[in-house]
Image (tube, rainbow, N blue to C red; front, side, top):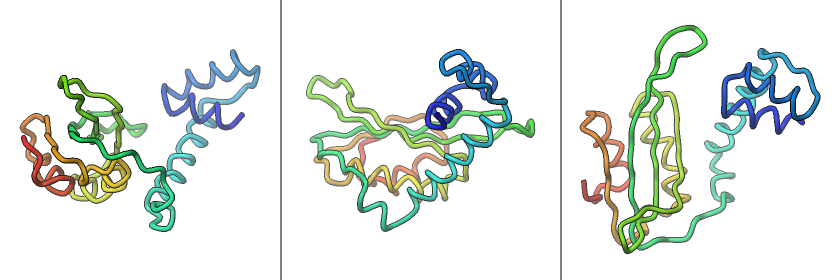
Length: 157
Protein backbone atom coordinates (compact mmCIF):
# COMPACT_ATOMS: atom_id res chain seq x y z
CA UNK A 1 0.00 0.00 0.00
CA UNK A 2 2.93 2.34 0.57
CA UNK A 3 3.51 2.36 -3.19
CA UNK A 4 0.02 3.81 -3.73
CA UNK A 5 0.56 6.33 -0.97
CA UNK A 6 3.81 7.55 -2.52
CA UNK A 7 2.25 7.56 -5.99
CA UNK A 8 -0.65 9.71 -4.78
CA UNK A 9 1.66 11.89 -2.65
CA UNK A 10 3.99 12.55 -5.55
CA UNK A 11 1.23 13.75 -7.83
CA UNK A 12 -0.98 15.97 -5.72
CA UNK A 13 -1.18 17.80 -2.38
CA UNK A 14 -0.53 15.51 0.56
CA UNK A 15 -4.00 16.14 2.04
CA UNK A 16 -5.63 15.02 -1.22
CA UNK A 17 -3.42 11.92 -1.31
CA UNK A 18 -4.57 11.10 2.22
CA UNK A 19 -8.22 11.34 1.10
CA UNK A 20 -7.53 9.11 -1.93
CA UNK A 21 -5.99 6.44 0.28
CA UNK A 22 -9.18 6.41 2.38
CA UNK A 23 -11.45 6.41 -0.66
CA UNK A 24 -9.65 3.84 -2.83
CA UNK A 25 -7.99 1.60 -0.26
CA UNK A 26 -10.00 2.17 2.95
CA UNK A 27 -6.80 3.14 4.79
CA UNK A 28 -6.63 6.20 7.02
CA UNK A 29 -3.29 7.97 6.62
CA UNK A 30 -2.59 11.47 7.90
CA UNK A 31 -1.47 14.25 5.59
CA UNK A 32 1.79 14.39 7.57
CA UNK A 33 2.42 10.64 7.08
CA UNK A 34 1.87 11.01 3.34
CA UNK A 35 4.38 13.89 3.29
CA UNK A 36 7.02 12.00 5.28
CA UNK A 37 6.75 8.79 3.24
CA UNK A 38 6.65 10.61 -0.10
CA UNK A 39 9.65 12.77 0.74
CA UNK A 40 11.56 9.74 2.04
CA UNK A 41 10.85 7.87 -1.20
CA UNK A 42 12.06 10.89 -3.18
CA UNK A 43 15.29 11.01 -1.18
CA UNK A 44 15.91 7.31 -1.81
CA UNK A 45 15.25 7.77 -5.53
CA UNK A 46 17.67 10.70 -5.69
CA UNK A 47 20.39 8.62 -3.99
CA UNK A 48 19.79 5.76 -6.42
CA UNK A 49 20.10 8.11 -9.38
CA UNK A 50 23.39 9.46 -8.03
CA UNK A 51 24.84 5.98 -7.44
CA UNK A 52 27.28 5.28 -10.29
CA UNK A 53 26.90 1.50 -9.89
CA UNK A 54 23.15 1.79 -10.42
CA UNK A 55 23.40 4.31 -13.27
CA UNK A 56 24.87 1.62 -15.50
CA UNK A 57 21.88 -0.62 -14.78
CA UNK A 58 19.18 1.89 -15.75
CA UNK A 59 17.14 0.99 -18.77
CA UNK A 60 18.59 2.83 -21.73
CA UNK A 61 16.35 4.33 -24.38
CA UNK A 62 17.06 3.63 -28.02
CA UNK A 63 19.01 6.24 -29.95
CA UNK A 64 16.73 8.48 -31.98
CA UNK A 65 17.66 10.43 -35.09
CA UNK A 66 16.61 13.84 -33.74
CA UNK A 67 16.18 14.93 -30.14
CA UNK A 68 14.74 18.05 -28.54
CA UNK A 69 15.81 19.50 -25.20
CA UNK A 70 13.70 22.04 -23.38
CA UNK A 71 14.49 23.64 -20.02
CA UNK A 72 12.34 25.77 -17.78
CA UNK A 73 11.81 26.65 -14.15
CA UNK A 74 8.67 27.06 -12.10
CA UNK A 75 8.23 28.79 -8.77
CA UNK A 76 6.85 26.51 -6.07
CA UNK A 77 5.89 27.45 -2.55
CA UNK A 78 7.64 25.20 -0.04
CA UNK A 79 6.12 23.97 3.21
CA UNK A 80 8.10 26.70 4.98
CA UNK A 81 6.30 29.33 2.90
CA UNK A 82 9.29 30.37 0.82
CA UNK A 83 9.18 30.34 -2.98
CA UNK A 84 11.87 28.32 -4.78
CA UNK A 85 12.68 27.51 -8.40
CA UNK A 86 12.23 23.95 -9.61
CA UNK A 87 14.16 23.39 -12.82
CA UNK A 88 12.93 20.83 -15.36
CA UNK A 89 14.57 19.33 -18.44
CA UNK A 90 12.28 17.76 -21.04
CA UNK A 91 13.82 15.40 -23.59
CA UNK A 92 11.79 14.26 -26.57
CA UNK A 93 12.25 12.47 -29.87
CA UNK A 94 11.48 14.66 -32.88
CA UNK A 95 9.48 12.79 -35.52
CA UNK A 96 10.07 13.42 -39.26
CA UNK A 97 6.92 15.61 -39.37
CA UNK A 98 8.34 17.76 -36.55
CA UNK A 99 6.10 16.46 -33.77
CA UNK A 100 7.64 15.31 -30.51
CA UNK A 101 7.19 11.89 -28.94
CA UNK A 102 8.58 9.84 -26.03
CA UNK A 103 8.89 12.79 -23.64
CA UNK A 104 10.83 12.31 -20.42
CA UNK A 105 11.30 14.80 -17.61
CA UNK A 106 13.93 15.47 -14.97
CA UNK A 107 13.25 18.05 -12.23
CA UNK A 108 15.21 19.30 -9.24
CA UNK A 109 15.07 22.19 -6.81
CA UNK A 110 18.70 23.36 -6.90
CA UNK A 111 21.07 25.87 -8.44
CA UNK A 112 21.63 25.53 -12.18
CA UNK A 113 25.27 24.42 -11.79
CA UNK A 114 24.18 21.46 -9.67
CA UNK A 115 21.24 20.79 -11.98
CA UNK A 116 23.58 20.63 -15.01
CA UNK A 117 25.46 17.79 -13.29
CA UNK A 118 22.44 15.94 -11.91
CA UNK A 119 20.57 15.95 -15.22
CA UNK A 120 23.35 13.95 -16.88
CA UNK A 121 21.77 10.70 -15.74
CA UNK A 122 18.69 11.35 -17.92
CA UNK A 123 20.84 12.69 -20.78
CA UNK A 124 22.82 9.45 -20.65
CA UNK A 125 19.73 7.22 -20.33
CA UNK A 126 18.09 8.92 -23.35
CA UNK A 127 21.36 8.76 -25.31
CA UNK A 128 21.10 12.44 -26.19
CA UNK A 129 24.74 12.67 -27.30
CA UNK A 130 24.34 9.76 -29.72
CA UNK A 131 21.46 11.37 -31.66
CA UNK A 132 22.34 12.73 -35.08
CA UNK A 133 20.70 16.10 -34.47
CA UNK A 134 19.62 18.06 -31.41
CA UNK A 135 17.67 21.24 -30.88
CA UNK A 136 16.99 23.23 -27.72
CA UNK A 137 13.72 25.12 -27.44
CA UNK A 138 13.84 27.49 -24.48
CA UNK A 139 13.15 30.99 -23.26
CA UNK A 140 15.97 33.47 -22.62
CA UNK A 141 16.74 32.73 -18.97
CA UNK A 142 20.47 33.20 -18.25
CA UNK A 143 20.86 29.81 -16.53
CA UNK A 144 19.65 27.77 -19.53
CA UNK A 145 22.59 28.03 -22.02
CA UNK A 146 25.17 26.56 -19.60
CA UNK A 147 22.88 23.61 -18.89
CA UNK A 148 22.29 22.99 -22.61
CA UNK A 149 26.07 23.21 -23.10
CA UNK A 150 26.51 20.49 -20.47
CA UNK A 151 23.92 18.26 -22.18
CA UNK A 152 24.52 18.82 -25.88
CA UNK A 153 26.70 21.84 -26.78
CA UNK A 154 26.00 21.54 -30.51
CA UNK A 155 22.20 21.72 -30.10
CA UNK A 156 20.55 24.15 -32.48
CA UNK A 157 18.99 26.88 -30.37
